[in-house]
Amino acid sequence: MASFPVEVLFGLYLGILTGIVPALVSWAFGFVFKYVTGVTVPAFGVVVLSVAIAGVNGGLLALNDPTFTQSANQVRLSVAVIVVLMLSLYAHNAGDKMGAEFPRKLSLRRLTDRTLSTDVIELVGGRGQVAVRVSGDVGDMEGYPAVPADLRREIREWTATFPADVPVVELEGRVADRLRTEFDLADVAVTLDERARATVNAAPPLGGLSKRVPAGKRGVSVRALLPTGTARGDEIALATPDRTYRGEVLSLRSDRAAERTADVTDGGTEPAPDPAATPSLPVADGGDGRVTVAVDTGQASSLLGSTVERLSIQSRGTRREYELLSLLRRAGNRIRKVTLREGAPLAGTTIGDAALRDAYGVTVLAVRHAGRWQFAPRGSQALDAGDDLFVVGSYDAVTAFREAVA
Image (tube, rainbow, N blue to C red; front, top):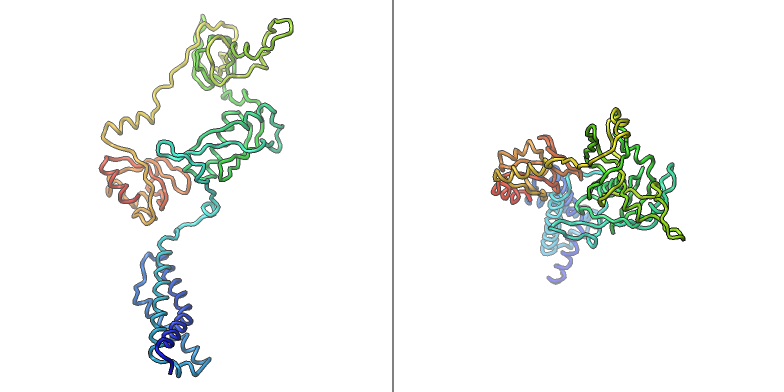
């Protein structure tokens, strides 16, 4: 008969040999049960299942080698049973934990989401921001003319700052929209890498001014004294001796800009500036110039034959979103952004089922679910862990809500 230490070693070996299958079954059982029902399997059930499976394994070993049961004594079997139970309970605990943390909903978009490197994210005012720069040469879009060299150089030198808390796919869309707006591109495609370097393919503007003229309007160019800061898109009023015309600025060109871009001849005289060669300004620097404004079709002819005595900028009024924030604050309410944590009581429910107003005293203004923002969400709006919510309520209510779900 072997000594006690040898029997213990044999027991460890036997327990590991027969405990692998019970451990795998316990892990799978704990994971599936927790993931599907959200309930943890009792440890007693795991012990019974593991001992039963280990007994089957021992029986198979005995059939393969009849001397197995004859040589095994009480010490060896006891140690083997303890090892089997330890392995099974550990595997079950790991499976149960994984079932609780594993996401309930998977999508191809989440699996393929790319992220930015943390090295390029800067914290500004408590929020992450990233500076996007164009990398490499600007490519051409198939089916469009080639991008002019000057425009290609401007796009290469372009840079802008964007929020870093959005998916890369959405960030690419924002960069493309910004490029399309600033350079009036006919089409643009943007791809970002983890360093926020943008690969850009662009199509040059096609009929830039005609695209900006609204339906039922005509673009008319007149000379006027341009107030400093006038920009494309401003609403203006053109006062003539007979009447006042109102319209939207489509483009503008200052005489000062024309003088700066005019070439000086060898004789020292300045030729008249070529209007086609003078760049259109995004913002006027003041002084005389030409402005193209969109007016009603019936007013275009009369405006062309009139002299503009005064150009004034029309106010667009107070922005409604700021008025709303002021009203909420004066009423004692606060607006906060809250991110639902894993295991939060709201995860896996809807706004209507959660009854946030009755349970927490807050109202949801917007939800970012699956990377997309939904403003003024309905009660059927789903909520998952990781979703961002903008909620409004009293200070105490918002604070208690954040502590409960964030």
